[in-house]
Every structure is written in C-alpha cells, then in structure tokens.
Amino acid sequence: MRVDKWLWAVRVFKTRRQATDACTAGRIRINGEVAKPASKVKVGDVVQAARRDRTIIYVAHELLEKRVSAPLAAAAVEDRSPPPPKKQDHLDLPVFAQRDRGSGRPTKKDRRAIDKLRGERRS
Image (tube, rainbow, N blue to C red; front, side, top):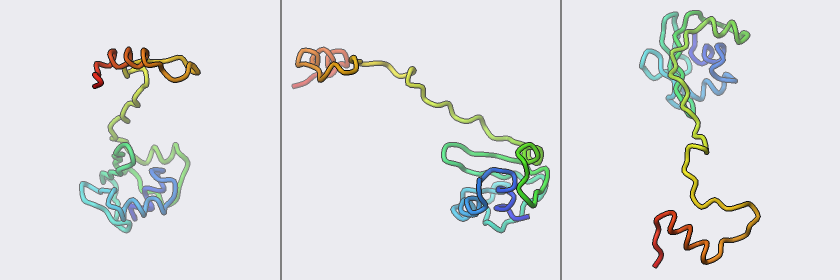
C-alpha cells in the first residue's frame, strides 16, 4: 500500500495531498529510509512523520485503503511517538519591571529603577 495513502487513512494528515507533500519534502521515513509518496508500507513497518513541532512514530498493524473513523484508525497503528514538548508557560519566566496597565510610559526615575533591577548600566 502507498505510504501517502496510508498516512491519510490513519489520520496523520488531514488530506492526501498534505501526506504526498510531506513525502516529497523528505519528512516521512519507513524503517529509517526516506520514503517517496509511492513507497510501499507493509504490516510491521515503522513509519516516522516529522511534523512542525514533533515527530510521530507509528507501527503499522493494519493497512487501510480508505479513511476510517478515528477509533478504527487508532486500532490500525501502534503509537510509539515521544510525548509532545511542554508548552512554555508565561509563569515560568521571571518577571522584571512589571507596570500597571494604562500607567503610561515610565519616568526617568522609573527607568533607572528598572535598569538597576535588571542589572543593566547605562552610560
């Protein structure tokens, strides 16, 4: 079965065209080898798809010719993907010189206090 059609059928990509483009761009691998859109997938093959922010790794347990419902698609593959990266929470970042909204621009005195807090020196 063609890899682009299989990736679309198991819902890795929303459209078959996106799956084909990913194959053409070299973002799809079958058993570690770069796959073309017409590359064949067999039961037991490990298929890796590089997405924007993560890599999806599936083992093919069933070859689906047509797109099926999500529960059937999930049953056709074994997901070996690493967990998605944690999103940076704005609470993890240190807060420097936070001003009240609508208080206007800092005065010269405020600016000096902010620079001192940040450890910056102005000449």
